[in-house]
Image (cartoon, rainbow, N blue to C red; front, side):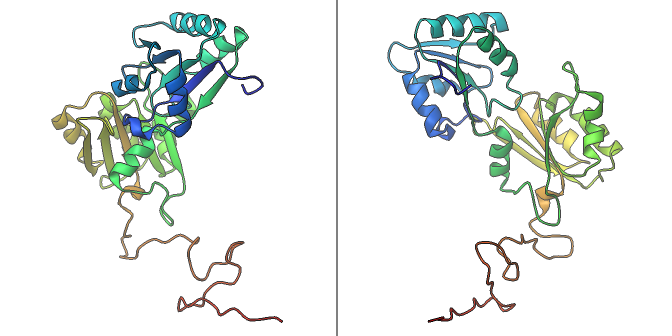
Length: 276
């Protein structure tokens, strides 16, 4: 809600490394009177940004109703509230239910985006998730478990697209994930990666395939705070034909708005011609 000066900010804290906060998020954190953060997922170093006298509370042991009371009471007292979520608040951040209650209280809010662990993991792996000729789609989802997913969004249904997939909150069900991927037609050699606690101390990166990933996860004893990535883009720096995939954007033979006269096939840029 942007119609009034916000009194409550839902802030994306990023994957863990506090230096990955946006400049805007950093500034709000430094000014906040109440910092309410998801301590089970947000790195504790976030506390170091609080100004002297700020109230800092952990939310992992609180109910929705208790969280709302803290935020609403502080905002109505004229205080600035920073509700700090892990990664980006719009992905599995459980903010929709909080926003509904904030609006019902007649208070203004703003969402400040953060770096998702999905993109931090891709950075750590050194990969592009959308590789020309391989896939141009990224599916962010989770495996059905204690929290169900809609039937039409079952993992095997999504996996039929053979796009890049990033699965949150699913590492404890890695066997189920692999079964669903196989059912969708993924081959045993499909590249997979698991990134645990990305940018935290103790970060772990596993690289493997559909065939090997279950044993790798078991050996590493990963049960939480880990992302699963799957798809041909994870190993697409060079294709099976030995040719490096290239985008059209920088192709010398591809015309576009900012390069209307492109280079010839030799890669030599055309010479400018005087018209006067």
